[in-house]
Image (tube, rainbow, N blue to C red):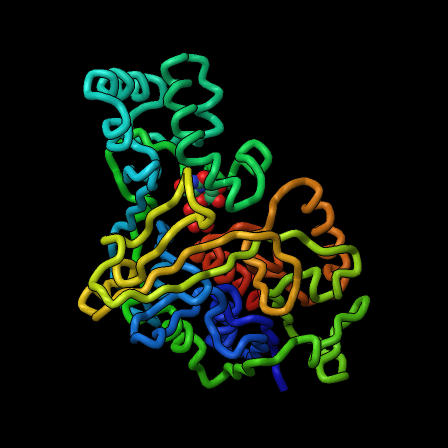
Length: 382
Ligand code: UDP
């Protein structure tokens, strides 16, 4: 009855489902949660403020095809996202850039250091903190130490339970030191939010005559992943199966649990116009939470009464009921374990793994939409 079964309706699953449906395939989506949109899911809270239930998601991309594809389902509230770090009560722009440099050092020193950084790395360049730390020039080393100690060390300890040395350098490399006066968190051409929220965007994407979405369904109640074949409701299924969930949990963690970091979100509402006057403040040297997001500034709901914020507390995912695996912890040991699961499933023809969980990767929204567009094309061509 179905040509394709997609497990999960986040950015990965929804994009694939839509593209396969447009190519004429009849698609079934099995979604464990009671809603679509994955971790991008947003909805008004009890005070009428649109919040991101699974943490702040800011869309940004340089990929024209991704932007075009998503724009079929939404208009945009576009803005240049900015973040500050609270360092002992002082707010400084993050990523650390030339504006930050001039805030931290007096004019004469900052002018000198600015010249030095530009000579060394070139204007406009992006230098990962772990790279900057390798510089032997004592003056540059001093900047690197400042940035490391005041921006990266404690935030990373809170977020990952490990030091910046211990985690994959690509993770801290997401927020490089910028040799420019650009205060934006991302330098991408398009950045912002779907105008009415992510949920309506994904609902529109999935609103297609060839797509059926079943919510609150654990795929394991309908699908069985045998050694070489998938059974759907007990019958061999030879269509495409696109799995976007956690791979270890699909196999009841038979080789052991894949480690993830999870987050505890503490939402608070205040009957005042503003809490922090901006969308995101990172707490890089104090507090148990990593950052505070004030939604009205993120989503452009400036005129709403009252304000809702969220504090993020990171912890090690255990798989307990109610916990969500958000971040794969990328290192050699975990990759080896992941490969064991991937090998197990690769023996089954027509099963595809896609997304942060199924691929055990750290994808941004645009990167996973891009990957999903490419996978759909591959599947359709086959
Ligand atoms: N990071 C940090 N201090 C900051 C911002 C980021 O130490 O103020 C490090 C931290 O290790 C974090 C990583 O850089 O996990 C990536 O940050 P990003 O903001 O991209 O994380 P996400 O928004 O995906 O949670």
